[in-house]
Length: 312
Length: 272
Image 1 (tube, rainbow over the protein chains, first blue to last red):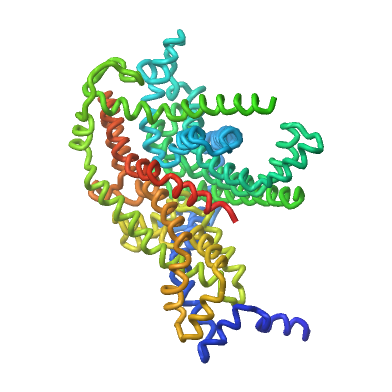
Image 2 (image 1 turned 90 degrees about the vertical axis):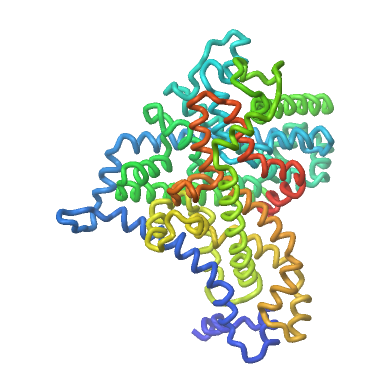
């Protein structure tokens, strides 16, 4: 017991404490509260409270005569809704289809453009430019590029003898087209992190591997890739977050169509909230999405983080 | 062998990077081609060039208003963030108090619980605070930033304590210490955060779309979306390109001019 009490007492050897001793007679909680209160107030109002509120709303069921009660009706309706099932499935495809290709492309770009020359600087700029424009601006550009017939893609494909393709109107192609726009938009962002990660790989390590007879592939597989562990641990959760929260192009280009082919979870929430005014359904869908996001990004972070620790 | 692979990689990357820049190339070319040319998709047109599309885009959209609203939103968010983020970042970097690590983890939750995901409850909060359909309503959910707090905590940690101890010995208060000693030293961190914050909010769409209903409070992205769908309906693709350029151009130009600064900021945010 005495040991516990000693642990809970102020850590005497703490360097932060020495500083505070220089200000005599000042209670230690005043600066802590004063400095953290503004940020904490806003976080409470717009992050913690909304999570609790949406959780509560999702279990709120309307009863007759304006009375409300707790129940599972919203979730029952949600899981019975084929549009929601479609949106969840699409979102899984969208996540896999955007995360893996954009990370692989980003890594390939970074590997090819890692030396800084005038040429690589220009090429890096080209790849990074999409991250500076709004996703709705990208959507406006791709609305034309993917236009059947006169659009840029079909215009140049026609020169190769390919007939017009309805990229966004065909139920089999629409989600792929939306995926392609997202990959175009995000690859440059991830490339910047891989470039920084590659710069942190010690040259001696690569030289040592070369002397030991390791070829280019084995150097990459056994030295470079493990050294990029922290970069992956940072980038993958961000990519997961993006896959669940970037739906601006769906809102402006496809409205989830044709026939729900591009409906994603957040777009489904938006539809229920802004078009159907079904707060119960929108809340239940939000709870499911938040749970999925927390589970996926925290899991990927821990797996990659642990992998890193193990490798090094 | 090794040099050949290098060259091959560079060639492939060059080809891919050229594909990457095509949408921008088309935007620039199409925006400069007046009228409705049949080969509007062409990247190497023969016809005349001019600024008429920009003129028409400017006339049919409310660009000055959208610019103003966007600047107010980005500036307002950043101004409040700089205060909350500096204060909280300092507290987490330098002060010791029970429950600090738990509180910090609670702060970091906001990295994942982003406002677009919480549109349903946040909209209800805006209505009850009478902030619905105001620019302040667009800004409010971003006034605290977990990301900025984290960034400033890391930045403050890199500053040696000697400076603070010297200032404290001379009787400086905590606010004075932060403002006159630490903030000047933390300027690179603050600048990096400012660049990331402004880029994020200049480009944001879904939350401003939900938080505002009257045209007078629209920001650039929301304005562009309705402007573009109108122009697309009339197949006025040159005007769509010009309008897109007007919305995306300012940040894009800043990026091209201060590229090194931007890249350093983005990367700074991810490292450490």
